[in-house]
Image 1 (cartoon, helix red, strand yellow):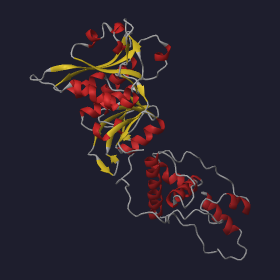
Image 2 (image 1 turned 180 degrees about the vertical axis):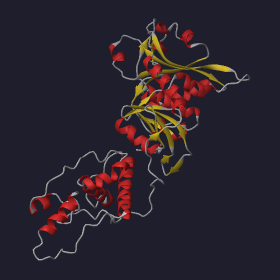
Image 3 (image 1 turned 30 degrees about the vertical axis):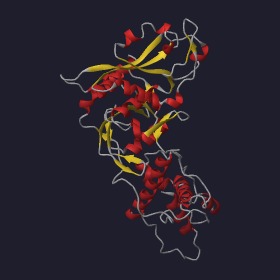
Image 4 (image 1 turned 180 degrees about the horizontal axis):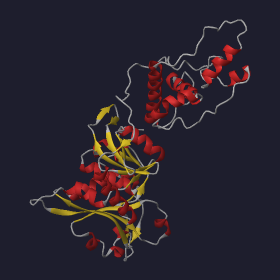
Length: 395
């Protein structure tokens, strides 16, 4: 028996004048349940867009956010509503559980009133939202996890990915935004490895882009969640699995018999023992070489551009059909605000200021390479404070 039914039973059993004689509990209509689901979807979309739950702000600041806050609190206080909404809780908003309370007195009824019918509240009725546009961007349906019928086709990919992790070819990286979500991407979400097998046509509204995905999971299930929904989940409790260098190189080359190899883009770490250099986190040199990288760095300890020290190769990309020097210069301009300011002396005591060392996470550098390849780099800039690539004009 639900608490509402317990409440009605208590009122019926304690009705000395028979005023409630003909009252019977009514089942919640399907339309009411759908309205509840629709309002919960609006709250979920708010969370995904703002990367936080609605707050109890002043109504003068945001009436809508205040109402979303009140509605969410009311849902969390109701076991009945939680039961209805749990299958739709892709943002994990219903983790707070409602304990069953035995109703023994009128005081118990006031303290445990799931529908707020016995007390005044600044919360609006859950089915009557004011100041909210009727236009919504709610998806046609909400994605659910289901069994992947052709999982055998994807199982070798997961096995190869695990082998790459074991061999150090892939690592785990912090999730840094929707621009990382691409077809062929691996990620970790709530203990499961996921794979983006398909990405539908992208739709952009304002500065927000969305697309329907087909995500396969290592436990043999799949989901057709939205790009922004996956993004929200990864921000909260996920990690990326890095690309193989060969995967980025494939995008750089796409060669055939008539193509000509023109050089290498490389990313290096410094092995300089100087404490000031070693203390700089995420310090990388981005460079270009027309010869093999091994040949280019053989004399690194005697060259100021390599900080007069040996270096370690982090990533090397063989390039075709492009002006690789321009590619290198574009990367340097993109990360110019994060260029390492340092002066080094060569073997003759002459001072040099190398300009090819940058402070930025490795995965962000790789992401910038990808944006240059697909021509989208002009829409973005690197935010050194946030250590993220962001849209131009974004605060």
